[in-house]
Image (tube, rainbow, N blue to C red; front, side, top):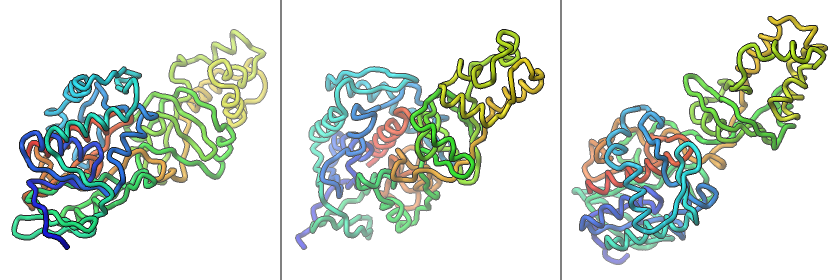
Length: 393
């Protein structure tokens, strides 16, 4: 094997967090090497937001992230804000727009964001090696040695930026966790997040509604999200379900409010306005026909509304506002946009993303136990944590 190349810092992973870390360290005069086993950088960036990259969210705040330590993200997010990334985007004359709920997208293509990051890396003299699978990582005498693709590189600083196991078809693995454990960092059990949920048993009949969508409030525990829910041939999806999936745990139920805008007593009012109507017809005025039919069948309210006591109608309203599903699982890491869990924050500095017990070792991005809501929050964590580590190495 040829002699090792020496750098100030080696970053494992050429995704959003890794590239941000590299450009911010490189532009500080550090000699930086980025290594990735993939054949192209930023693959997850390229598929995000339907190919337009939902690159940040203007409503970013620490309470929109899940972590065993809910305070951990505050420092990095506070020092590299959405406006900082917007400034970078505008510097590169990339046109963008706000969609809904503070989500920012490129007008054109996600390729522009990857190109921007690569151009910034080039400006900092960063070297990027692709199609370079890592075969060994060792540490001795304050130096990390990385064997990769038949070559060797050394540096006093090593940054783990290889993400989590979500979307394995893009090459995602649990490599970050294995490496973290090898160097004495603990790992919070990872699970799929921002993922469709599956239904079985008696609830399987809702799968016949595949393709039907409606705005709901989905809740699990104290978390609640108002957005669209979509019935699929396997269960439940859509933004509201993806959001709540991050908070859902196997065996638990989720609650759906199918009529978040309906005032109390609306069914009793419908009875007085249209006494001969059936429940299905009353529901069809507020919900898609197929969903109204299925819910009416399950509620099994016999006959015309005129025949129902107001108390019975109030109970129907309550059930529609707190309809419980107990998913039998999720569609797993294959369909999960991100991962909940990861390298435990207890072993890391929130300011530098460095391992407390091993100087020079850092972990950033999705590899760490910080997971954002749907809608650009995870990219903002990638930029902020990458920038924080890049300022420290």
